[in-house]
Image (cartoon, rainbow, N blue to C red; front, side, top):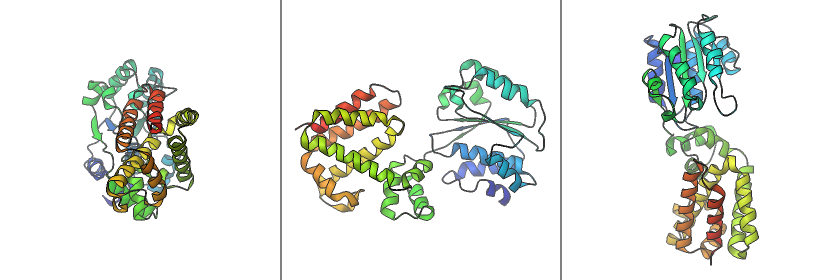
Length: 327
């Protein structure tokens, strides 16, 4: 039991799933197909590799660990999207054409399908036949953040583990214990991490991210104070250029304007997240009305929702910035 637990070392906040997989190994009740579904950053991929490590390590845990981490184990096959999707050709060649070859040195042969939701229906139907006829040693792990994109027949033939976003207090505690952050900073990052420990670690690293946020706030303050339409569109262009990190910036702005609202209402640092930026908060709260702040927060919420579907993103950004500029 302890040896298998060591394989899952470093995974936090998903104890129920670790326990379920560990018991399955101990009881020798391994399914042919698993689905690890949940939001990005919920450690689905890390769990898949940890599960593979536990199944493959057998009598040589340290040696096999090294090769698994380097994607160099003969009985572990990774399938990634080619371009925007996983092609039917990949399923045929990498799984169907390979799974009948017995494991080289382990009791199992494991296939990890990353971003499984990118498979089209033909590819999924091809995979389904393999799930129904898989040899005893074959284990297929599908990783997805969009369970509804998988065929019901695949879901019904798989053991489905649903990963939940980590609780803020779990992330906060991790950042304090393992990243050495002070409580206030750990709390701020945990609120912006959206349940993702990977994102929290990224946010905790270095001053570059903090300086970037400060620069963004200075751009917004310039719009507020100078009422400069050129700044509106240049800042809009800047945010569009950060498309890959826009969700992170929107989360930051949501917390920032929430702090402004709290400061205007209570004038107390106790409930403010960005305590170190009190002077900047004072400037924003001086120029913005309560209605503007509430409307801006609503705009950010709409952007976060629309971004998932790529709907009028640039228009949403410019609407928010123009609202900031209002008298």
